Amino acid sequence: MQLRIPGPTPCPPQVLKAVGSQMIDHRGDKFAQIIRDVTEKLKKLFQTKNDIFILTGSGTGGMEAAVINTLSPGDKVLALSCGFFGDRFAEIPECYGAEVKRLNFEWGKPVDPDAVRKALKEDASIKAVLVTHNETSTGITNDLKTISAIAKEYDKLVLVDAISSLGSIELPVDEWQCDVVVTASQKGWMVPPGLAMVSVSEKAWQAHAKAKMPRYYWDFTKAKSYLERGQTPWTPCVSTFFGLTVALDMLLAEGLNSVIARHARIANFTRQGVKSLGLSLFPEERYASNTVTAVKAPEKLTVSKFLQVLRNEYQVELSGGQGNLSGKIFRIGHLGWVQEKDMKEVLKAISKALPKASA
Image (cartoon, rainbow, N blue to C red; front, top):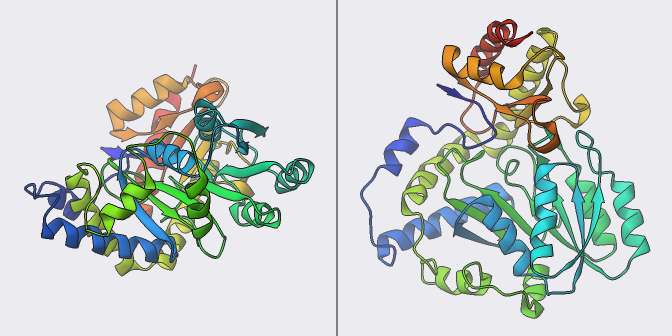
């Protein structure tokens, strides 16, 4: 099966072998060596000197951790959304009593940095800016570098959902002055779900010291104190740690610049292949993501049937649209363990399945 959804992504055989290893004591020396080693390797791939914590949970758990560790009820935040996951990032602080000002953009269009500057200029009380770097629901990548620079002009915290970008798309955390950056194991990191990885800047720690949103499981203070002992506060997803150890070695051996270039190359190959089949991209190509391609469904195509034909007859698994894009687009994931030959197989299957699912 060609699993080409935006995540979970396929795992290399050597990662799967590691994941199947026997359990160890998560309070013992062997695990301490693993978590310290993995944390240092993640710093290289995050391009940061900041603290990094590996939390057992989904990417959404990491997003919640970013919010509750830096904010208090009543704080005003600017949530930038151009899709399903941007909306999710806005909903989390609302649940904890923050005053969320939503800056919404048409799905398929990126966040407009000028609109961000205008919103921050008009309201000095905003404490943090929440941004989704790569919006998998629409297949676009936001200009995080510019957005973060604007937020820093106004001395705001920058909280980033980089779940489907970090490790696959350029994001130098320190250079771009991002305060909390969240990613997750099942995306470009080539391992199963189970871990959220977060970086925490000095400015985020200063906010953390004053933050009053309730927290327990996701508390960065607990994570930091336990990491100093080579542990996690709670029982970690040990198997995914085993896999991450192997996957990080693979990524570092390839080299971060090469990994990013590979994703750009394969994304371009996929987009050109889609267009060669007479299909149209959902976003403008200059904003198109290098980890997921969103394709407009032709008028006569029944997307649900198309995905079923691909899955049952050609062993290719793609994703449909989310929210108001359900039935209107389909999405091809190409992140993590992926090469051009995989996309050749996917595009060939798409060409055969299209007529079988069209009215």
